[in-house]
Image 1 (cartoon, rainbow, N blue to C red):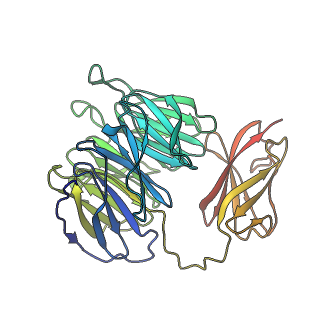
Image 2: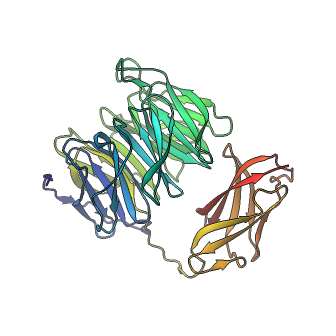
Image 3: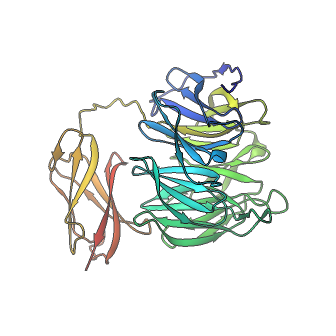
Length: 434
């Protein structure tokens, strides 16, 4: 049994407003534990789960579904599967020897994991918990993000044979056939990545010495770097919020940068001392969570701020060496849960098609082809550009293969998202042929 340092709960203020999630989960790498923070009861369980089978195996990043949390165990070359109800703790998905996995992202019942030393991305089918494909990307891949059928992977360029950094790149993986769509050159040592203002924002850390950090902005339409923010410091973790701000955690010394996603103007720096900590950031709904691992010997602190005014809401003490924080998919809603069907699958026919596509969906109760209520479909091309938005009127939804200006779209792959209240609730790939 691994030892977990005794912790105390530090409460500053109660959360106000609607709770869009109930729990947050923190990976504590040094103590090899998973902490569960309950945001309704303002409590923390620092013994929610033990991570890894052996000591000093470096748990790293995690990803969450409705039922499970999947945590990367770097030096065991595996992913640990833990049920959110606590019934399953010791279930592992093995990658390959010396994979040294770093990050994990879940898209449509598949998990994608970066192998830092094999220079690969692994595809795991979560229905069978096995690796079903792998693909070589750039050197020492780490963080990832996802948009409209594509996975974007930061390749830090760290060369294991020389212990020096080669040029940084971002690999674009088409998840339709799990192939490399493009490789984008970026600044040195890209470690964090997020989507903001329909562009990709990449935090390039530099070499921790004479080359300082930059934020490279990549256009989703051209897949080229269109702007660079000379932010300085050693930026790592990065996340965009829903209020038009991008938050960047400075690796060392710990601190937070904030800039506007449209003007790219830096509004807050670590020197302003508005935020505490800064090893990891996660902007979720109305909250900003910041992890402070401090000296990696003492217990870490997780701070929660209000996004609207950057006020500190509360803070929790967790385990040693916290590396990641993720929120559960649960949320509390004041709306009537029976007002619309719970969608589990979207159906498209015909597909492929030469001219038009019809949509219906399958709910948890029955298949319904009418009464779409307030749902709508958004169509995107492979560059992530929105092509058409189709609103329902109590009838079967249909796309006529044209864009918003009425022009006929070209042959190729398109992506449709079924949305309710601006939330994606189901997705499907379309093939338009001429």
